[in-house]
Length: 95
Image (cartoon, rainbow, N blue to C red):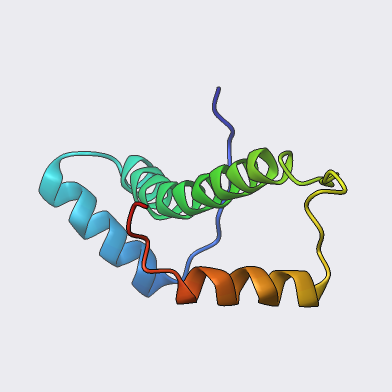
């Protein structure tokens, strides 16, 4: 699918486009369209990359939620500190 876009260019810009188009053997309209497509294809790729990042973030965030722990796994600081002291003091040698 293509669209028609009418542009108004300064004489200087049109002359530059016309000269370049003649050099490579295409019409000024074809050259202008090609240049615009190249310019905006880069911007479009950046937008896609952003969309892909957003999709990846959404997939990652689907994993967010809550966690229910058994009562045997206390979350109080004193219990955690005691467990850490025991682990740090251990030589981890088999008995």
